[in-house]
Length: 291
Length: 296
Image (cartoon, rainbow over all chains, first blue to last red; front, side):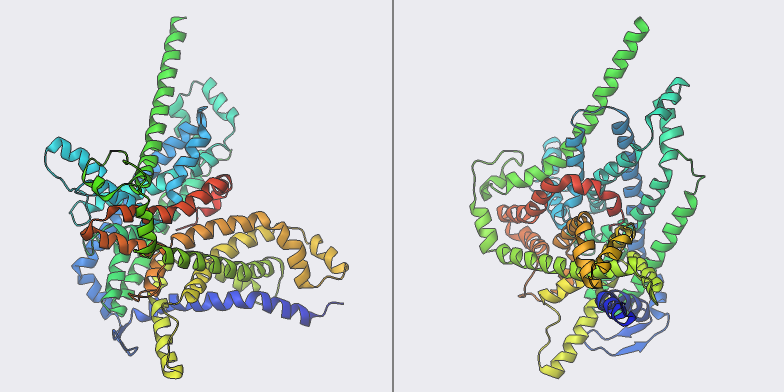
């Protein structure tokens, strides 16, 4: 008979490497984020002094951090609204109609999602470039002078980040909602049509309530991921310090050697993202409609 | 009769409207990507003219210069090495762990499952600074001990960090699949005299092939495209870099020297592998995307 000793050895051998790596490179750093936010640490020496809540008090008064959080909120709201509106409407149209080349559209719409943020930043800098970019060449043609809106160090640069983020996300969510909408049985639409419900009524009374659970989950994840993606986009697309978001502020403090302060910002953003997703989850709560 | 005709034309208009919208969206996505491909074979002088002009000819020199002078060749090699190594590490570590966590009940198994689930909510962007400091302190300690620190600016360490941070998502996905298999498979293997390890490797892993392919796909994309961890842990100016970080440096340097051809050639080098892979497996990727919804 198989001994429990060999079972134990097998289990340890299988699970231990994953647990060790997970602990060292994920659990420990996460705990460190919270611990370090209470300390001041020298830029080049590992000596730490306990400062209590001083880092957080300084954050509350830091105009740059407050601007960064405002930018974060602006990005969350605009990117989420635009992306979800178009993704859901297009998905509803595409699943209800018989479209020629549906496969082609699906393949194309998914492409931005597989590109690196660095590549997307490169593509959009080709569009926004002041001298000979695609967008500005059109605008300059009408204005008769070189315009440079939306470029890295211009005040409007946050708009360029919004456009790039929507461009990246929209196709992905559209394909996702198409998948969940196509699960709605055709007979429901037929009987609704017989009852005289038009396309709009069908959309609001049938499609939307039936995929609501899916929308809710993706919305929560989208908001958390927007906080992270905004960081990646700002870091790659925007001149340093021009339009910081929460996490890029955190990273800039790390570059300046203010590790404790940087981690305090990290804690605030982390709690903010959790509270926000809890709030969204609560606000979007509806009675689930069964198919 | 007239009423039906009117309805028909409204229907046609609606159809046309849908196609216009869809094609617009497709154009908005394809044109910028295609533009970069075309720009990568333009001569530098062409960039001062109309940006909408087609390239005058195939100017491959951009790629040669990006590959050699801008070191994109060695960055590419680094990226291939890191991506391959982290994928291998991830599979070797996550597969057995997910199998045991999903199919065996032992002391602490419940706790470990919850722990890995919680990891889904830890985003790498928050913990990259503590990881960096941990490795730097480690380097300082090693310097005292053996006179040489090797944890930062090390491709192997970078691969280990990539693999570790991908563990929660990978284990979550794999255990989901393993949990659905009936236990009869192993029972039969045990009766035939196979050990635990043999049953796992010979019987279960081959069955999990579709899930394994999904995992390789998603993680390949995220490792290949990643740049925040790589930028932080490989920060030495003359040290090795991965392709996205090298490209980002090139983009920042390019603003002054205006050698656009090389920049776009570099962009093509980064996205070509992912695009080719996507074309080969797009069906799989768009099907598996409901699980990828957790990404970010």
